[in-house]
Length: 146
Image (tube, rainbow, N blue to C red):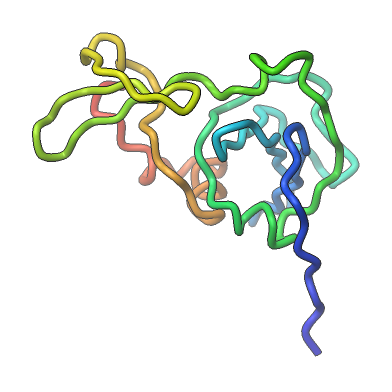
């Protein structure tokens, strides 16, 4: 018999537990713009949550990943203000023209490669891509500027 997973509403500041293949647990906090910040801290259980707001990376994530219940919400950490709830700027590289843009707070503006250097490439990730990256497999992280 298959266990039913309850779908839920996404709330800014919710902290999700992400079960890893090695038996450990990673955590992610929901941000605006359909993003999740993955904590640097890796815990031993769902109760072993991060004590600091220190993140490995911030990426876009498909809504169904957070709504499915696959990653249970284990905490809620409200943002101090609206500005803090926005993810950092991300880079967009046009595949045809090779031109660079910065994406931040729902807006895109022309940019240079120097401004994009070291930034996350804007993309929306599936759950398994995020788990792979947490586990050290960087095949999904292909920023030619890093």
